[in-house]
Image: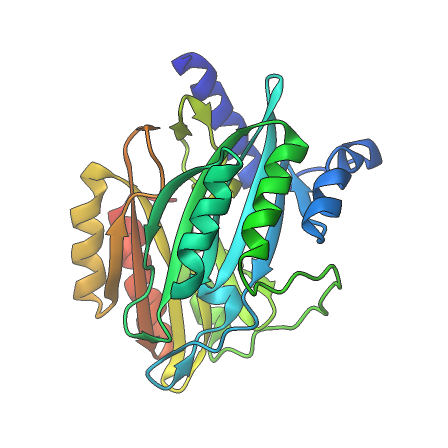
Length: 294
């Protein structure tokens, strides 16, 4: 099993480092029932079918800064085929009143709740995050997730949004400090940093696109830029990253697990930072270096 997971990790890391070929029509058709059940089409890359559901209905502020949905308020679910079953995981962004109805809906359909917690600090209104993991029949998993979404006010639409370039001061400085070009999601500039080792739950390998890559998102704020996301770390990396974040003036907003029965044991360190683009991106680069993340 360890050998299989190691090979899985090497393959997914290789895919993450180079552009993947466009999925075929037949590959996309395998996931068409999921899109129909959820009510929104996802994207397919390297065998991972992922649907994003930003909470555009919520108006969340930290101080004077409105948190953009693509920066820190994006529900998502990811699917992949595994042996004779389908595996899914994800993260649902919820108001406080939505949490327990969602948990009940997930459990009623046999999907595990693996974590319930905050990712932010000082946000108004309070936002909670429910992480989940399921293994079973593709359509049954999708139906359970749709029932969970129906217990919320999450907007579901298949309308493809127009590409909007982030209006960020010194975007080139941010990308230079991050060491790579970012990707655009509305007005948010996003970066992902996958690991070169396997991460699993219940002995099922989870690819970087299934929430296992360090994520850093930048948006505009009154102070210049705001950045949020999470560092996906082994336990022995946590203290050095937390130290680097605090030394750079970055808020550590949460530190916890997203998984159960994971191997290796992973810790997710969430953060929030605001200030000039150079200052914020340099502080986060230092934290990346402290985690030995390439």
